[in-house]
Amino acid sequence: MLSAMSRGTAIGVWFAIVAVIAAITTVVLGVVVTTGTGLLLLGACFVPPAVMLIVWRGAPPVTIAEVLHEADRRGQP
Image (cartoon, rainbow, N blue to C red; front, side, top):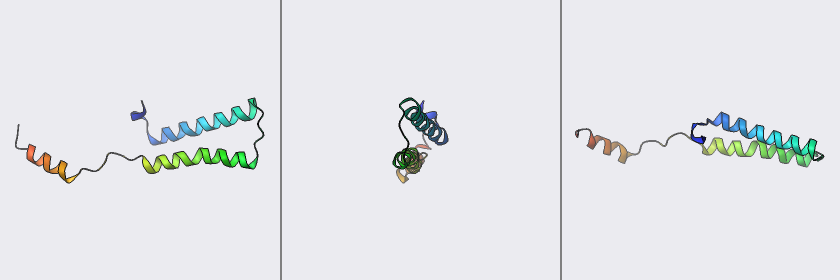
């Protein structure tokens, strides 16, 4: 399931989860959202997707060994 998920979808799901957790803690538990709590929630919202955008890339580039191996196999049936 995760292999078929795009970056945009994964980041959107992350924001939705953090927003739901913030709403639950604010409304149900009665937690007062102060400046420190708000900054912590913003950090929880923006840092993981930023790391995911940096780390999550497409397929790695083809290496020279793979190119040479394919060239050797072209003559074989």
